Length: 513
Ligand code: XMP
Image (cartoon, rainbow, N blue to C red):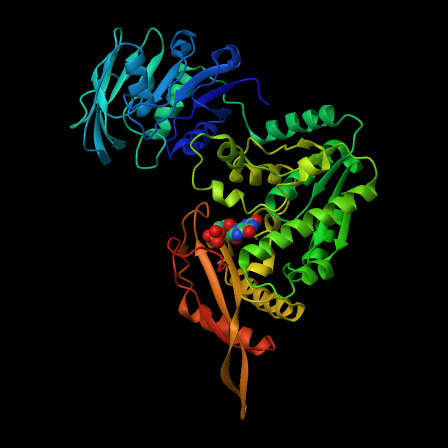
């Protein structure tokens, strides 16, 4: 990891990951850490600045999250945002006014001091507020540097000690000059070097993997998705054939997936790849099962069994590599585990490291998804791999409502192939966050020539989203939907009706099971 960083103390705000991303947009590395982080673990040379995040609590509430009070006397610049500003106020002897109603939404900020934090920020600009309490009396040594109509102390500073607080959220897009404000904190106040880039990440991580793995061998479950693919190419760059990737064909994959994975990773990247066709084993286990959670459990267990068996065949292996990303890491250790924690439980390889008694290598664990894509770009990976829609671990099993059989998988594979290739041809693929087809457990009447048919119904689902937590149905133009429907019904035997899903998440989910 880079030598310079910003620490973000996590007081539970929904915007915390956004703060981290905004800091990294300035090419400065940062880490989100629990609020009670021991200050002895803070390296004064490496840590160029500390950001105290916002949070839902009131600083006077019993059990409100605190930080070590000595954090303000380390000589490291601190920026408190919302709750972080209020906590700074309380700890340093000022006073916070409790309020019964929240101020939520846009507020006009009037800057009274343009030094440092508000350099190049206009006298008046739009900011985003979301708070109940506010600063009533500033601690000694602090000066007000901005106000808003409802918040007399909307920002303050102790210039000498380089301590700053803002009541608004500079990390959200609605704060017009938020990017400049964060940039000023990093460059002007923390004197951070701005040299964190994906290029430097690749270089440093390759050498870290080399020294960590030593002469040992590493095994990785390659799914063909963005995260495991980038992890595989990165580790392969570091240790070559001492990385063995295992690709399990569970019979629930998209059309030609195994072939595609072989072509990209074995042929192009020359990765040591073992492809295992375990589809019979998976389908056998799923026989007669219709409950979605049961399907997931069976698939998860079977995957572990197959993977373990294959890994044993390789011989001695010391490390298991995984494509864990930063949001997973934050959610799994945060005291305020956010809603995305539920997505994690979907992961069906969670039990592997413990069972196999392997040490972990997780080279992407400090990265966000968009950064992983950039790393992939640095490694020469193609847009087709990096821009791929997410695909669930249990695959088609949760897109076949009712019993999963090979025949039904084959029908769905064909439908999915026509749907995806059509939206690719229409230039819509990258605008859509995820698109797929669902096979319903009903048949409907139709006619073909002079004959009546009684065949399958499929639903098409396409959503727009930022992170999969919320989603809206994609407004694919009607004429294109008509073309897609015709194509599917004409080309896929066994389907005579196509429906388009127009539900948003919430209350619906993206997948149907
Ligand atoms: P939902 O259906 O919960 O989906 O709105 C949100 C995102 O998660 C994916 N998903 C899964 N991914 N195993 C996975 O690896 C699963 O069991 C699973 N279920 C849903 C879904 O495809 C979407 O991207």
